[in-house]
Image (cartoon, rainbow, N blue to C red; front, side, top):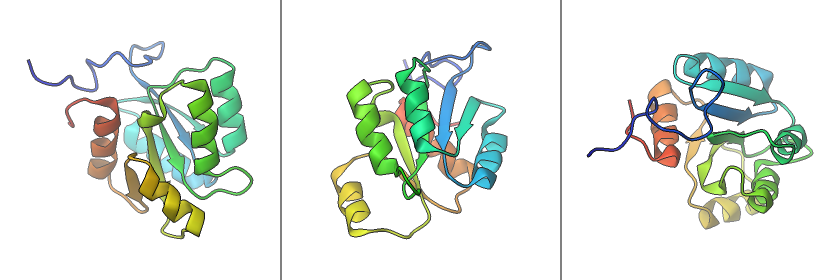
Length: 141
């Protein structure tokens, strides 16, 4: 039997029976664009503040995967990763990092150390769906 598709996967379904994703990016425009790209396949919750996203997860919100900007003010994607690792909801293996290409030494070291996929902004729908398929362990559309 082949790999499941997005529609067949059972990870953190929303009330509509579709997978529910979390997008964390301090740029609200990125949130709107990515939500629009994904709306036919996923339900997407967007946070522009990583601390609020972690609080939602800690409060019981469930997501099949997280798309997270790496470099944000106050709390970075790396900090979110560390916080979510302590909660194990969802597994940190299900985080896709979004990057704008500007890296600190810490960010470079972090990206070398983790196996998570990363997408360089700007990215297209195919790259986004491929990265999600990778972390959700399904066949890409």
